[in-house]
Each structure stands twice: as C-alpha cells, then as structure tokens.
Image 1: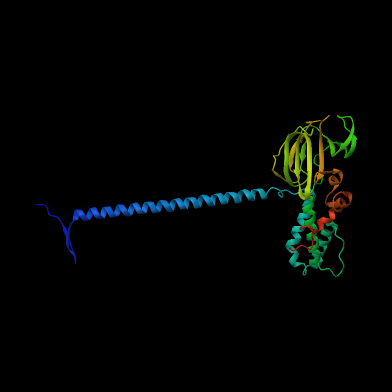
Image 2: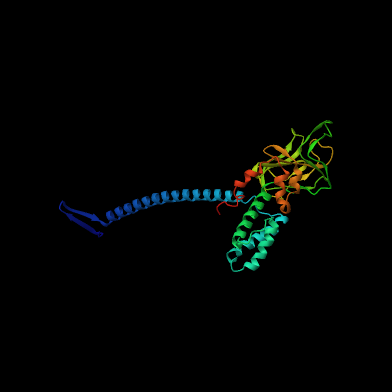
Length: 310
C-alpha cells in the first residue's frame, strides 16, 4: 500500500484532512492566479509608460523643430559688420573693469564711438555710461542693418533702368518703373539684402516677372528679385542677409538678361538706390534720404530705444 502524507486541520467547526496532492493543486492554482494578476498589472504599467514615452518624444520633437526655426535668421554676419561685432564683444567682456582701466578703455571706447558716429560725451560722463550708450547704438545698427534691406543684391556690370517713370521697352508707353534693373549675365548669383521670410518663390506669370523671389523683412519691408533663371529657396523659408536665393536670367516679360530689384514698405514701392548705398559708414543717411517712411516712430521700439530696460 502506497503511503500518503495527510495534513489535518482542526478548527472550532471540526477537522478536515488534506492529502499532499490536494495541497499541491491549491498551491499551483494560487501561483497561476498570482502570475496572471502580475502579468495584467505589468502590462498596464508597460502601456502607460509607453504612452508617456511617446508623449515625451513628441514634445521633444516639437521643441527641436521650434529651435531649428529660430536659428534661421542671424547665423552669418556681413563683412562690413564684423569689426563692429568684435568691438562690441570686447567691450561687453571688459565693461566691469572700466573704472580701473579708464585710460586703455577710453581709447577703445573712442574708436567704437567714432565707428558708430556717436557724438563726443562731456567730461562728466563716466566710461561706464559711455559704454552703455555705445552698446545701445550698436544694437540699433545691428537690428536695422540685418532686418531692413541694404546693399546690392547682385554683382552687376551696370544699372540699365532706375526707379521712376520710363518708356516701357515692351509696352512702348510711359509707365512707372517700381525698381532698379541690373545688367548681368544669365546665371549670376542673386543675394538677399536682409534677413526675412520667403513670401513667394517660383514662376509668376501674371506679373510678367517670370521666375521671382519675394521676401518679407522687419518693419513691413519687402524685396522683390525678378526675371530669374532659377529659384534656390522655397516659400516660408527663413533666409539671412547675404544668402544666395537664385540665379539671374531672362524669364517673364524681358528684352534681355537682367535682374529687376524692388524695395517696398507696406506694398508701397520705394527707390532702392538709397537702401543700396546705406551701410555702417552712413547709417543716419537713410532717415533723411527716404522721406516716405515715418522713421521717428521707431524711437520707441526695443532695441532701438536706448533707455529700454536691459
């Protein structure tokens, strides 16, 4: 006769006997139940964690996209502004030592003030106060010279037509010429004259401009580059000053290879010539040469307002 291990449990309600086989069944059942509960709980936690990770990845991607968009406009500086940027950086680093180094820094401040066209300060003005004025003036010039059209958009042999009334070469009647025409060979690089966003890029049949690029800049300014052979930017793209945006051509209503260049402000065509001559060495000239724009209203804007909080 085979021996069996019998376990007897005695309570107030009586006694009950269990063989080892019965106990094993209960233990296995309990184990399976616990395993199933553990599996479902773990699965729920895994699903929740996965959702949270996906949300974090989406948030990270959105932040990365926003960061990339913000990088578009101030990456490259033109040669005419490099000396100003270097001088301003040096001034910021050593500004706290101005009191102890009045003689040395006084010379550097004088050079920077001359570059910026700042009038000489009276004898009671401290070096620190002069540095703050120079910093504000540098901020104003950087803001304006990067955000408002200036300089030429192309290396050209000569200008063939200027802004104003003229005899149209195709229509054979006097009409307003809203820009400047540069005589160039087909395929000459065309550059943006200020930071901005591409509002249109492609073939514009209705205007007669053929392949063209239209860029929106700061303060309501807009530039147009027409009769191109090839467009190198896309609509809604951020472009920086000096970036190549196309190649000159002879597309649209044109009698020969050239670049038609316009400067507009709130849809009003302006003579591009004062903007083409405008730069660091004659910064204040634009405010008197272009009378169509109420420049005086800019004085309240940051960073043009020198008294704005730092």
